[in-house]
Length: 309
Image 1: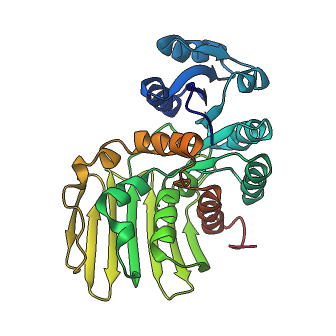
Image 2: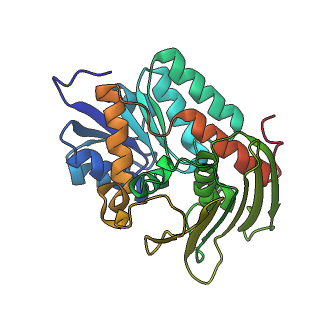
């Protein structure tokens, strides 16, 4: 826990789109001062830093010395390097999804956070949408979950598979919803346009009998992001784009969740929760172990490893 007698000095690694989003959240937060931006391209770092009156760095070690908390919003292949350096220096870290590129790297980040007494939170911000719905408070275990997360081609995140780019959101959500450990992961991927899969299908089987089927594509004709959840007592169909749902279960959910601040600005809710963990000692909203489990499943879908090995 950090004293509230002075503002938290916040820094952002990465001056791209998501780096800009995180920077603006820190700049607007009452308990934080955005003081530094790190980006190997110093001109890009300066452009974002100047917007918020912060300092620009192209030296990671020098950047880390200036801050108390760090958001890592660089390309996924660089998450580990920046997060590990910050944690080893005793800095609290919010790392965008995926937590790292490999399960081994994720485990090391969790170990570093524990040994240095630091908060390690992962940017699975869709969880805040479910929290606004009240879905995590449902007193029942789903029997089956189906998810679709598709979008048209984009130039972003082509250094990783669609599994690490898009599906990982739903992998985290279904693991959290299942309330159980994963016992088996089956995956089917395409060759992709640039050496990484663009389409992925997955089936996760859980110890409690729940089964989740997931489909993701980043070469679809339009955006399509839905989830179907089956309970013994009924079904729930969620449209993430329209932020609506159809519910035949007896469980009361928040039909106006689209207007809830956590749903309207899930990235902001993510940053707020991170700072609450650092300043007030609140429970970490999405701890490193959650990021590890989602990453482990994603790499298994990609055929890179056997889940849990």
